[in-house]
Image (cartoon, rainbow, N blue to C red; front, side, top):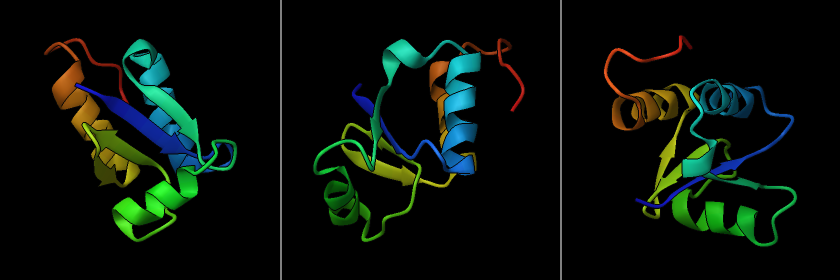
Length: 87
């Protein structure tokens, strides 16, 4: 599975997702692409979603928006049952 988080450092919603990733040691499984630092990232995000909204988790190229939805997906799909950090 190919996972990429399109995010912004200053965005509190992006921070929420990055904190969850860090707290659960998922960083090796998810590529981070900062929208304002990665060439073509904003254009790619707009092409995929029609918006410049962050964060966006790309799951095998399919976008998932909304920080709570992203955290829920990460919890449900990457963490072992019963071994979660709280959000």
